[in-house]
Length: 403
Ligand code: CAA
Image 1: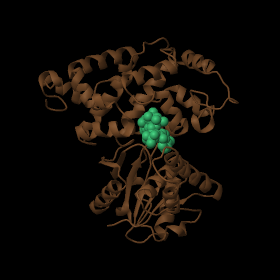
Image 2: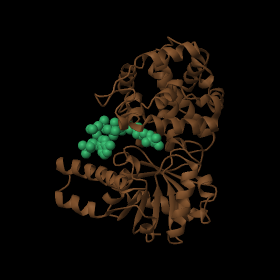
Image 3: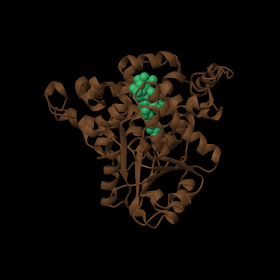
Image 4: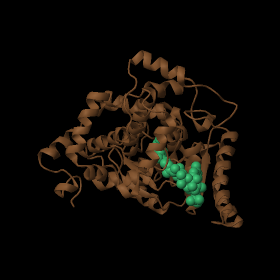
């Protein structure tokens, strides 16, 4: 099926970013939100991305005008009536998502694909609200959508093979990299990234190191930005929503560090409202020390050691759980982390990192972290099986990959 026109519901940072990507590929796109002010804000964000390209000489002003003409803002579902594919990018609330999909089904052509950009909610549950559930699929972009190459394609239980193939072809037509992911909470990348970010938050609240030092250490490891800068960019509200979904599905190993909930409660949402772990708006102030002291008094945990491994091993362990559950192949897991989070290219992804370290060393270190920091580090069963079969990584020439 060829997509001649697409739509996006929700003109926030993600919705606007996705609409920019679609228009950049040369396709007309309808961008909807509930009121004109939000629509205008979204269109302003798209214009800013194009203007940045013009300023850098990557595009002429007239090319920018052509691209901007492809974007139509609206507050009405009726404007989706000739769209072949619509991506929903509203906030993470199942009730709201159900309403959006029911509205879409009323106006869209029978053949249209209804996609969700949800970060972690169940695609199958979203699809259960509509009749044409075979046309519902997850098409999950990463922030900032204009830059990040990866797009996860997640079929729900009801999704037809045709819908999956069409979604993959659509993503390729946007010059992005689609990775098919088996449905699970957080899908693939968020399922690995959130435990990493959460571990940074535990280290911070336990006084292991200040946020800027942890960020510096992770940039030295090769990540494009530190975990706290990333938390602030994603939004502490978004991260709280995703964390809750992960905890609900995977239990205690995904329990969010208390500081994340406190940040959300105290409206320190990150870049979007001028203050998170860092301050972006000089009119906003607020020392995090009293919050950290209160958490330490409540948990009785402070002064734990910090090391970049503490964060990276969370990612590696969750990648192993994902592999065991066939969420994606080893190469797709690594590729997704490279293209979706900027994991250092020279390290090849978390599973290649584990192979380079040695799976036996990874298991021993996870056991040590488990004793020292908590059972959230309990090694994934596949890691122990690999050790028992001498799949130790590069040193035995076989691990997650063959060498
Ligand atoms: N919108 C559009 N373009 C942007 C942008 C934005 N918000 N931010 C940066 N860019 C562009 C810049 O204009 C620049 O473009 P050129 O190459 O044309 O000059 C390019 O990206 C590189 O930017 P910078 O030089 O300013 O900075 P950088 O090299 O550090 O890159 C970054 C910035 C791309 C954000 C990089 O730091 C990065 O990859 N960070 C990791 C982001 C990440 O992990 N994203 C996934 C989060 S998880 C998620 O999104 C899922 C979810 O559901 C919660």
